Length: 515
Image 1: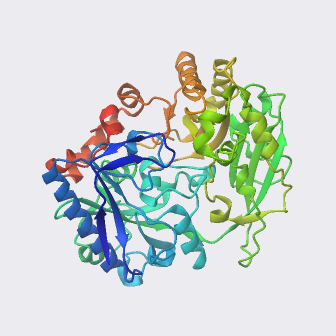
Image 2: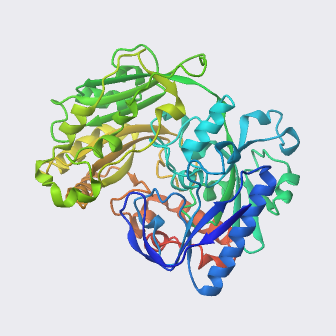
Image 3: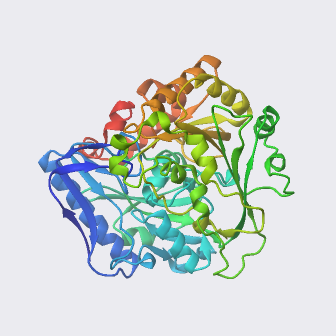
């Protein structure tokens, strides 16, 4: 049985502790027994969600369906009702109970085995494990697996599997609860995947519209509660890891801008599946950068051959959590002098160089849990790939003289889906600014403002990650998205009844001129 528990007013903070305030109501989806058939489970959750939305309307509370509250921004804020649409690992609801195969009679396509029906509150790690048990995999996701599926779609997480787009590229259908008695089954008209009868079993009205679907993908928590999604999967695959400490040069940046991937592979003669490079912004061409590349194998070997150890600690956010020389994150601000922390040097000292062929894993194993020990600051700028060399040089100049409390991490991504995808250029490289949280250092926001000012001054187009910090505002959204912004707002009006538009919202949508 699935229902929603109302935990009352309380002080609340998000996962990264960048949002901390009092809320009128904290709600969580609760599963009392292991889940069975997908239809009955999803109907139970949808009905409970719709009832909760009705109660919130009567109480005058806004509702923010914030998933695992992974975002750093006010997408996961609000003083009304915070709805935790997620399931913690373990408990009566097993991984397989969150992810279901699609039966032939439920689908409109001849190969339903490539589809997975997933509850929106499923965490990416749970999805990876459930799919791997069936010999399947997603193609890409963000760098960590703590986000929910609905949240990862809603902010357009991307990683560095450049040819796979963003996580949202592989979503084929959305089940959206929009209020009491109102839910939608949304697909592209050009790519229908599920039978109408399945949607009717959920009590949903079918909408097939390419423009509406693309607008609703990057939903930003403002289109309703994402109850379920259909994701297109691929056969389980293995990637070999190559991790190296090696300097970059201006020529390296030019090769990145040209998409000459083999020139970036540390002399390994193959096209990389995934690329992530972390730079020292203060000595970018003299101190070695941290290169992490995955190379997809042609054949997947048997399960149990993973040789990862703690390789996920190479990921910048995990390393940054260990940049403070303490074990108690709560004592960080009081016990550490931020001026003593050289973040690039700490990350280099913790980085584990790995020659090709020594370590490998599935996608889920390679992009595993986030293990922080200290608060973090995170901003991200999407840049047209052909301008990335200019953008990096402008950013490096802008941050000269600041304390060494952050790094730049570069990840390429192409052809991201969704009208409001922040990786909005056909060929994009994201500059992530990963640094110490503001309770440790004020430098992160200073650096983000400096980078943004430098990009503006140089006339370099960019967009900012919806779920990260850096100062998105209404003017920036209007400038960057133009007609797409109008289409997103039209989709919100189409999917949400008038009364629900005032209920299902969050402070970020207000700040960005989208509510």
